[in-house]
Length: 406
Image (cartoon, rainbow, N blue to C red):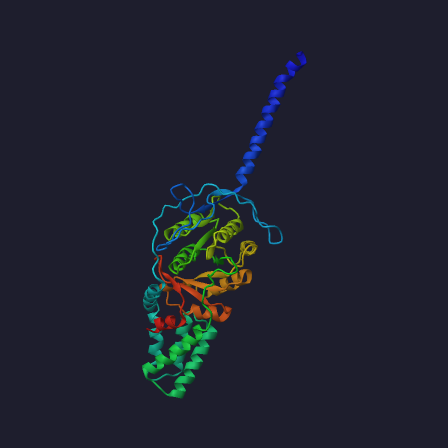
């Protein structure tokens, strides 16, 4: 007994130490587990419901909302994440808005484009309508085209064609010159390119749209605006906030979505694995049978190999569940030829299917549309012409040229 009594304090101390160590280990493991949040509205019984678009008459079941734990996604050669524990949802209390109809939006954007590019069009028409069109005039026409960022090869091609047509027709009529210029510009912009967005369900799965680009071009805003376009077309949309590095990016996207009744899958942990968030967003979209899942990604410089590799990983992880139907590269129209360099690198990593050209209202350099399409063979599918929530519209080749020459 005496020996046991002497050992009792030691046994108690050892037990306490073991409990403390176990608690610390459990806390560290729990702290490292990433949380994914599904943002969406709830009903009176605190059950997550699918957001109802303005004017919609039905309510569908939403993904089990809330925060849960997820392992990082495996590389494509391994198994995809399987854990799906979701509890309490974070609710975005933002008034639901009705997006502007696409048709009316196109007209407003055309009016803005007329103003922003008027100097380009007027300059060309003034030169080509002069009494004497000599080599100096053609040099000025070429310079005007280059300043508009059309690119060297397309500019030379256009000048050579116009020179030959003017010489053959022998006309100086402003109307004739404008008609010829319009025809040649439309050919350069190429209305035959497929500018449609693949945003319809196929094989029982939603269309997946991945949005990429460098820092500061407006990717998150573009995703939010495109969600409004799709909602206006009566599409069921779900957003994935895979930009996990920029402060408040996920919340910004969730707010955009909430304004039109679109749910967002995001992480509650800064710096979480973007591929995990992208995977969960597509998974939720499949389970809820939405039409489109749009995944926002972090901005990255095209010369940062590690970040570009990570972007490739995001795409590969998504493809474990569904095909990526669209990879949209967001470019700032004011960057000019630098935008071409960005497009080339991104295209090598994730196979760009379309360009979204933003800030086109703040520049007379709309010729970047021609340069991008000529060099990459990738169509400009959407243009942004302002800061408003509905200032994004499908690109129309002939409408674009008419606005330039108006």
